[in-house]
Each structure stands twice: as C-alpha cells, then as structure tokens.
Length: 232
Image (cartoon, rainbow, N blue to C red; front, side, top):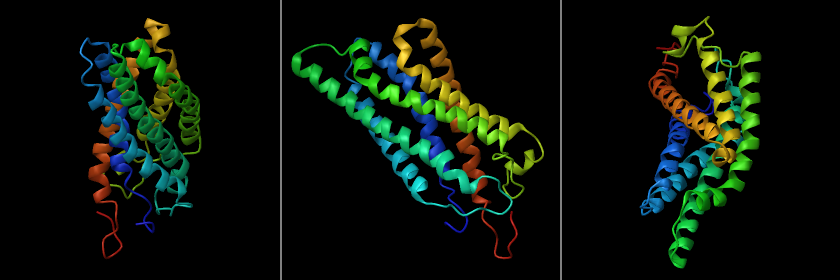
C-alpha cells in the first residue's frame, strides 16, 4: 500500500463529514425535553472519533508517504490529512466520553441535562478545536498557493477536471470553511447569529465532505496501476 501512497482517506473523509453533520443534530437533541438519547450520542461520537483518530495517527506517523506519479499531494498528506484527522478524531472521542459522563452525573443527582450544562462541559474541548481551526484555514490557503490539489491525470474522476481550478477551489473551501466552523464552535451560546452561521456551515461542509468521499470511493478503485503499468 505504501508504495502507492495511503488511499484510505476515503472513509476518513466520510467519517469527518458525518461528525460535522452530527454536531447540529446533537445540538437539537440536547434542546429537547427527553435526553434519553444522550447515551446513544455519546457512543456515536466515541465510535466516529476512534476511527478518525486511529487512521489519522497512522497517516500522521507514516513519514514520509510515497509520492504517486502524476499526483501533487501525497508527500504532504501526513499533515494536511493525517494531523487534522488525528486531532479532531481524538477530540471527538473525548467529546463522546464527556457526553456520557455529563449524562451519568445528571442522572445520579436527579437533574436535567440542559444545553447550558452540556455546552459548559464541552467548551474547553471546543477551544482546542477552535485553535486547530486556524491551522485548517492555513492548510486551505497553503494547499491552494502551492498547487497541492491539482487534479491528477491518473485518477478516474479527478482527471475530468484536469487543467481547471474546480478541485483546488473545492478543497480550499472545505478546509477554510471547516476551520471557520471550528473557530465559531466555542461561542455558539453567546450569539444567535453565531449559532445560525455555525449551523449553516456545518450542514454544508459536512455534506461536501461526504460527497467528496463518495467520489473518492469510486475513483480510488481505479487509482492503482494495471499489470501493464497503465491506469484505467
């Protein structure tokens, strides 16, 4: 696998998008009167964070990654894909533990788990994610500036956009938008406008990451060379 570069960023992008989409859904669930679903939410975050974190750490610590001929990304995937996945996967995993712990503590004391209590428990973690968000913004700018996301001619779908700025612009928007969303997260309850902007960004960016993963699931199957050295 390493001779061809790491290509399992398929499910990594899928899980990353799912996590982003889960956040506004979780916010809705916390605001409801019945909080019995908090346990399910906690384990969901733990499972998603575990997968993203483990694959992210593996990618981050595999240095250097093999460069794929005709692509313009692979040697820097360690810190453009691996490091953000490791950080936010770990934060999501811990967030799931915090949700379970907060729910258990509330049940033990016979009190309700309201939005304020849950947000207060998660907020220190959100500040760490917000700081990481600035890094995502810089990755988006740097990737565009240094031509990292130019569509490779050997990838089945991406080669359809060869010579255009569509894919680089999409990746830049994904990174910068996700970074801005992370920066807004600790301030959700301080402004209704911040909460609305965050929700719109989370829905749009989560869907975009998932759609990107769907395209990569297909294209990475044809990404490997055939016995004669050619590509599909």
